[in-house]
Length: 167
Ligand SMILES: Nc1nc2c(c(=O)[nH]1)N[C@H]1C(S)=C(S)[C@@H](COP(=O)(O)O)O[C@H]1N2
Ligand SMILES: [Mo]
Image (cartoon, rainbow, N blue to C red; front, side):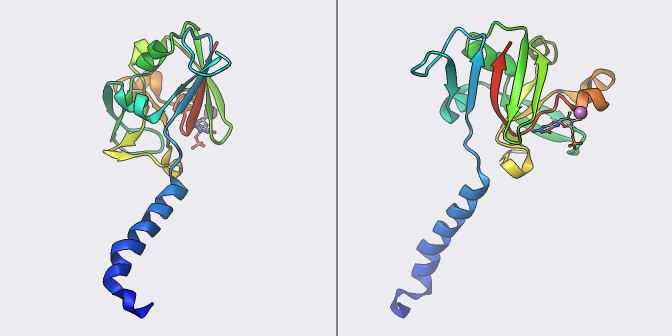
């Protein structure tokens, strides 16, 4: 054992431990979409499961804004409108479901009106579950203070998003 030496320990054990620590806090970056959609990719033809690779392949947009919980920061992710396009969404409302079992419905028209994004990173760092990940619905709050600030608007900033249901 001693012969393994510190160098071996540093080279192999530490990275493994760091990966394990990372895994504990990382939720898979994927999004399940169902409801009024015209494209599906599951066996029952009811769900479109957007993989991490597919989410990352959509054009990344950045919104720099404060939220009630975060100082001015750069949030990056696909446009909600591009996600809706990908699944052929035709509902008028988007019901969002989260890891903490919060459910909120926003008008599908918010996607165009505000250019809302499903952010997977903040200031260049992937969002972890403990800091609003894997996906955080972000609106340009600072650009529309009268419409996107206050108690009613706060409810639209949905974090830990795991699924959408088009209504
Ligand atoms: N994932 C998740 N996002 C959420 C919520 C929640 O419970 N879970 N609550 C929403 C509502 S209704 C409001 S008003 C604010 C509440 O934020 P607070 O818990 O910091 O008061 O976050 C919104 N986003
Ligand atoms: Mo709320």
